[in-house]
Length: 457
Image (cartoon, rainbow, N blue to C red; front, top):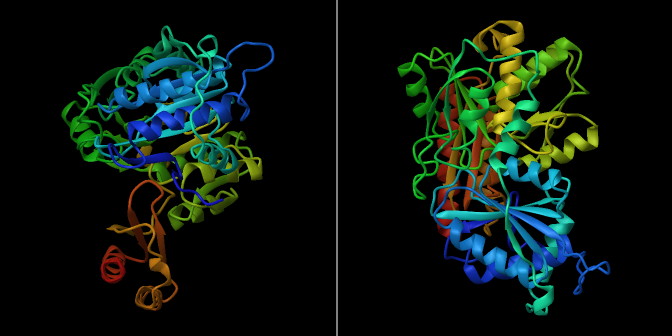
């Protein structure tokens, strides 16, 4: 069965347009309740106790609408709902596991603008769902809703101090003998789900914290701030003369950092800092998983440390799958999705920042010093808006453009074209010996893709 709704990170789209409509989300809640909590059964468990699911969301105004629709669908299926309100995606994963619930649901479009929203799921273990389970939920969407008798309907509960529980969990991943005293840290929560928790974590560990991007109004999530716009954090770090800055995205699973000089560090660089530190301490289990987009410089730097490295498809779910296949713990993407499986079951921006800070504090070095052995290859990334149903990679003109670029770089670079799993765009990535070369070939390929999309659209 092919996917119709689920992408690499749940279901996502423009609010009010298929599939993010109240009608479909209501049906999705019912289908998810049947598959995740009731084992695809049309009746309650024999012991009579209702299963329970958690719902968390980011700060988009549409979250109210979608939360109500999901809750109604789950209740109709006979599933209780535990509501936590605005909560980072990794926070929902943790709380679902801690409260022994059957599943967790997050209403969020992550780094997308506020007009978009999405639904993603976690199992009772705090893991993202495998493809087979997502396909089972999609199959159930074709079935009519059969509401449970009144005595079997699900109830709704508000979880007390959900934010406080998650804060304590984040703090528990940082060594108890270390603190952050003497550090001034700027924390940018992207006006998203971390606005009420991220600053508190670093403050309670001893840092002097300056919070920005912590005034959500339902419309400003990710707007010119957060991990997708780190220039905002850089300005704040320089203005407040901070030691470091931490930028998260709208749902709190991405991380970008800025040092006191204003230098911006992406996920590949932060992954190197954590991997190098763990290797030197003898606690790195196995190697590191990156993606097809991971900078070649990271792979080469890890090789010099005798750290194994493998690439997965783009998307943190595929990084997670590869880590489990290898039996490793550390992986991530340049976008800032970092996985430390000895600390959490999913990517967590706050926890990832604490792993970087541990390396900084214990080695008493600046981020720039820890990254001196790492030399990046210049990359150009261009998003070409297009219908995802078009197989642009099979079009001869696009193939010819890619071949010309590869010949022009004479084996000293690489080209990657891939459709986004979260947006209606094709991502054109060119990595090569200089920024001038990658930009020239990146523009050339993007123009060829654009022409092909217009001709076939």
